[in-house]
Length: 328
Image (cartoon, rainbow, N blue to C red):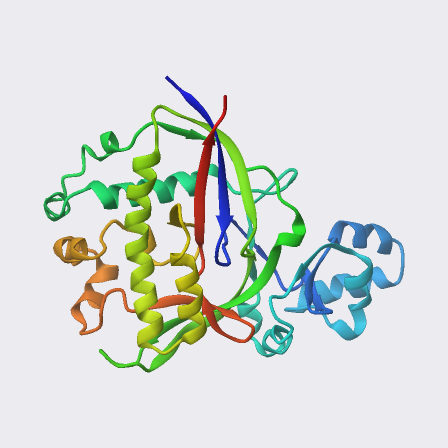
């Protein structure tokens, strides 16, 4: 028998579930500590037939980002969205960034606004449930044909649209230890500016279950907490006090914790955590992308995506709490 439910996801750390789109630097301007997304269609209509049209088209064709001196007024008059920066200090970091570093991945949007796709929840749940239920022996022998039978019936609809004011642009980087067992870090690759749902944002929607999910959510959360414990260990080992404080607050939540969306890394998308990672190592070593990393003396995976909060490493993206209630 199908059980109608209402689900609710509460964002605990900055979270991005994207749709593959990015804001190009010529499509927005940073002004007044916010990203002002330009309504290019409106600009073209207003400039059509005026001397400024040729100048604007020439700017778009040659510039990597719009010149604020000449076109800054457009950020005030023709902005279709205004996304706050997480911290005013990000303005100087944005100005110093290379042009290729300021394309901004955006949160998934539907016709009526920003939404959380149900696939993001179901994917994270399935990974966590398999991690909780598939044995080490099954991983070692790569026999997962029966994994689907471990997952009870679940149908979820996408979340309802949320308000624009619940999103911010954050600054993130990837950290990795300098040497095995040491506490010093180096920052890998280029920084990323990214639009995330801010902590406290709530998504909700409806769905159906084929059976009670209380035990399943507890199992899924247990697996997710292994990933969270690994991140907390990373924070304390590398003396990141604000990050450790954030992750401790996440761990203190009751209910089902999940890591969803962008930036969670290998451990958030894999059932191979804890003792399962050792069992999965022979399989991972056959994959070129993992073979070299596993051959080093560093713990695997050694890198961690970190989001800055007020100018210092303070969070890991993607942690949410999932709750549900029966209807009727």
